Amino acid sequence: MEVRRTSPRLGGRRLAAPTLTGILLAAATPPSLSPVLPFVALVPLAAHLARLPPGRGGRQAFEAGALAAVIRHAWGLRWLHGTLVAVAGGFNGSVTFVLMLAALAGLGGATAWCARALMDHPRRVPLAVALTLAWTAFEWTLAHLPFGLAFPWAPLGLGLAAWPEALGALELVGVHGVTAWLALVNGLVAAAVVGVAGGLARSGRSRRRAALALGGAALLALGPVVWGTWRAGTLDAPLQAQVSVLALDLSPEGTPLARARDAVVATEGALERMEGYPDLVVLPEMALPLDVDAPEARPLIDRLRTQAERSGAPILAGVLAHDERARPLNSAVLIGGAAFRADKRRLVPAAERGVPGALPAWLAPAAGGYAPGHGWPVLEAGPLRAGVLICYEVAFAEDARRLIRGGASGLVVMSSDAWFGGLGRNAGVAQQIAHVKLRAIETRTGVARSANGGPAVVVDPSGRAGAMLADRRRSEGPVGPESESPAADALTAQLRALAAPTLFVRTGDWVGPAAALALAFALAWGHPRWVRSAAVEAR
Image 1 (cartoon, rainbow, N blue to C red):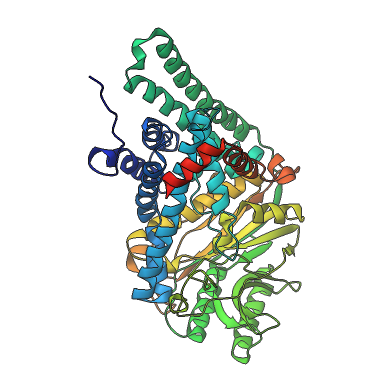
Image 2 (image 1 turned 180 degrees about the horizontal axis):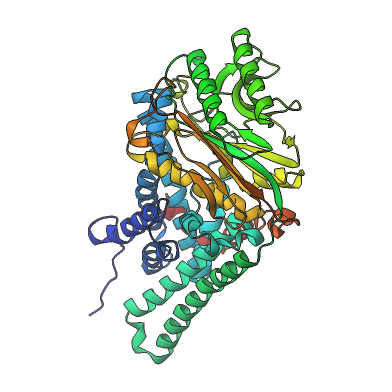
């Protein structure tokens, strides 16, 4: 009697594999507790894709990938919901979050569909290679979407930021190179699992192939980790400067003038208690939410200028500015030093700006958002040449690379963590600090981070947080300067960097574009009959 193999549908036990991958990917996102998860999180989904019927599994692959993506991002990006609600209002923020989840689910489904399509290719692309090409290509695509939609947050390797020595390859191939490495390890493990679970291991040849896949996965996983650990111990990073970063603890509520006054008073107190003699003092993003040219801002700017003279170091402060068309800008200006202004170029989609043509007008943030800035200026303060990244910009590897290539000898990050609210507050802060560590390893440059409502951190070129000023009153909530305890503290630490640029700084990201090009070529040059049948199945 012939036994017919039924097509797996999304339901019952068929939910298990993509659900498990979604859970593992969410758990592998900071604050992750295990360095093993990024190496195995994709295994259940990859094994599920490999078991789909040849030539007829496109729809099931898409559904499985979408389910895994929804679970992953609903938990991993839980901080984003609170941010959108705070900025855009309860209903608008919630609906926008759901729409963003739907878009990410679509990309996750497309990733799985492409991986399965490569396995159905006339040349039968191996599971590990198919998974690597598809996952790397779509992660790179998400990070380079046009019209302000680019969202490079939480790449596959972000969960390893707590163990930065494991990410030493970042200085060679960048974040998408690390994604390809991890995806390939996952694919090899999945190939071994499929061979064993399918009963093929009864064959001596199959057992050898499964053992070879597992052995290759182990060597591939350990090799870069061993090299990264050795490399971190051999770094010779000369001192560039002393930097003081402030951790403010002020509420984002209230009028801009009142918030600016609170920030100035808190900063004055923190600098009076400051230890050491920095070359630069860094305040958080939007520490002074006033136009620096407005009359009411001038007395506050003068007070900071006086404080800069007393401390002997200019102050880089987050302010509101306007471009030549009178549009608001999220900016950083130098007070007490040479004229300098950097405008935030990367704005959080649907939170700091509307997305023209992508979302309905009524979903635009209530605050109206900002206009994107332009240019890559480098700040000069004593011996330090610093590149400035404002909050969300720290997720863009290419931005940090541009600043280093432009002459920066260190990076400073200004953030406002006060908008991270609700269930995901700690996760949002942890994920941004993890991105800070990735930028430090890619460029082997020290990064100093100042924040309001979160910790101040100085990360060394190895990716380790060499100094951190914890958000010690987080549980008490933001307070003003009238509180008995100070609303700001200053962390002074050394900023170091390698003398020579890393390979990633010199060459940029080539792994991501190469994967996208290879995937597109394979899909376009498949057998016409296969392409048509796969396209119909996807619909």
